[in-house]
Length: 180
Image 1 (tube, helix red, strand yellow):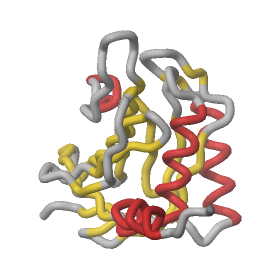
Image 2 (cartoon, one colour):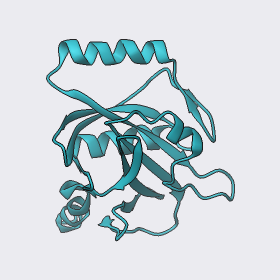
Image 3 (cartoon, rainbow, N blue to C red):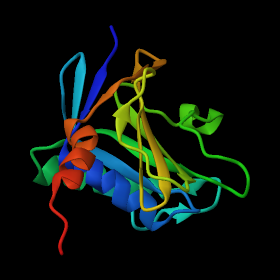
Image 4 (tube, rainbow, N blue to C red):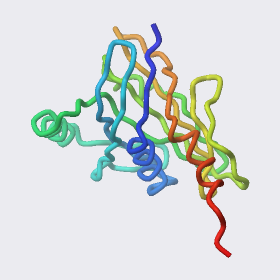
């Protein structure tokens, strides 16, 4: 059974802001929400401020990560449902949403992972669901793709992302009257 990943407006905006802010370098953060056996609801995307960001990789301090996870468990009604990171365009190499071997190695069983690929783009593109379960669109000169993966019983599978806010906000934005 395929797991579906539902992104809230807060999570979607958090993913965009934290990945665009450090564009050309990668970012890392955690996903907070709740889950059922076949759905993961992501309510918040929280970036790690102390992540060591590089052009083609990002490293975190595992002891700090444990502190953050413990703080979430003790102070919040949200559960840690997974993590996210970005892949950024590097020179002529376009970023993809594919998991690297290292991404797969550190993927925790029973969680989801979201990969945000950012590339330069010269023309606007509406946000849309792609046939492969990815959400893609463009904002401020960045082409952005979001893909989710779920790891269950040691098996990593792509998980379709559902985010009504993402596919609807461009339409809402265009509908606003222009100032004279």
